[in-house]
Image (cartoon, rainbow, N blue to C red; front, side):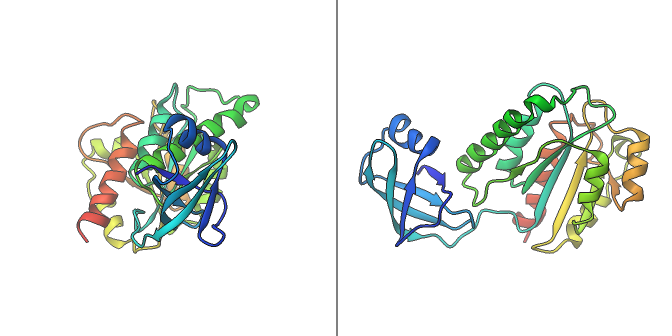
Length: 249
């Protein structure tokens, strides 16, 4: 059943859908009146709906039943990625959304190869946000992760003060055999609390950046004995979170 996020709350148990989602329903999927879809509100409430009408501009769908279950991780997980080259961040956003990330915070690391172009920033962030929306629909998420515009590490540190737990993945810790910090953190964190996890770009984080993160309350951890690519490490981490907080509960 196709899933769509709606921007407005239903009036008398009726949703109105327009824009790109209208186009997808009417032109791509070629749905007809009487077919069913799932609509999700901004608050994360989802409902099975029946299409009542398709006009030239909008789709009107009536609520058949509200769903009670949630598909969100029990903790809030933010992924901060040192800005990588190419489409690697798009991959992180797409797959990270499927795995339950709450939001994504790209940051300009000292070893980031990509030079951020402020003139193209708006369109780039809009594309990332669209990728997150489509991935959230595909994976039956109740909420769309937010994708932020890239920030400098100073801003990232300021934002980090709002989190309950803060970790940074560092390959040098992995090489030294560090295996306890992540497991300990996932054992301590409670449902509803927040966790910020920082990953470096292709060249990794510099020793200066690691020192700065540690000075601001971050715990440094390894992610197993193998060195992971910048686009692989966040997915490994999110899988570990899901296993620990969902499958083992």
